[in-house]
Image (cartoon, rainbow, N blue to C red; front, top):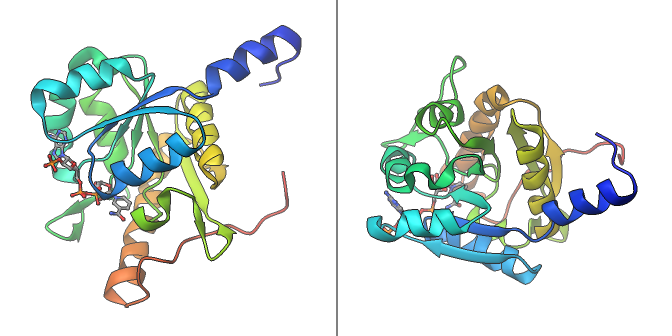
Length: 210
Ligand SMILES: NC(=O)c1ccc[n+]([C@@H]2O[C@H](COP(=O)([O-])OP(=O)(O)OC[C@H]3O[C@@H](n4cnc5c(N)ncnc54)[C@H](OP(=O)(O)O)[C@@H]3O)[C@@H](O)[C@H]2O)c1
């Protein structure tokens, strides 16, 4: 999509510095809040306070879902119609009782899209650890934020958000590609925790500058 003149200005201001509602204020919610606030976004984050979740989601122009995988359905119910028409950023790692819970036939993000039909689900940030999420960087290197979604504008907004934090954001195609992004997230956890490399690691896709 190419924008020029006034159209470019309108597009830019829609993309820039949106109000971001983060559902889940644990490790990830806190790190993303810190990173986004640092670069000028307005952010509200909320934990498991069912009577407040909808209000916070309604306030946000972009909603980030940073709750445990098994809590997605509850959180979607708590948000109700407050997320309709908005980018819903799925940060979750597909884990149930510590085991990988996505399949080559259906990702957690596609499941989430079925739970929250009115929202525009975008998969992002799950391949980074919370320890690196406020800057998008490890040892001075920008990590790749793999961003997948079916709605073009919603995906652009999340690409922009990741880039603003400091990630090298990469359009990773349609939401169905979350199947592979979730697998990568699981491998990341294996490397960091089961193989002992720790949380200060991350993926970077080496490529020609766009
Ligand atoms: N930690 C990482 O490095 C990392 C990296 C990438 C992706 N992820 C994924 O990101 C998600 C969050 O991880 P985390 O490490 O931040 O977990 P966490 O520290 O345990 O935080 C989870 C948050 O979700 C909230 N929550 C739980 N159920 C909720 C509900 N029904 N409605 C609203 N809020 C709810 C919790 O609130 P209360 O505290 O009030 O219960 C808490 O604030 C997970 O899906 C994880 O797989 C984690």
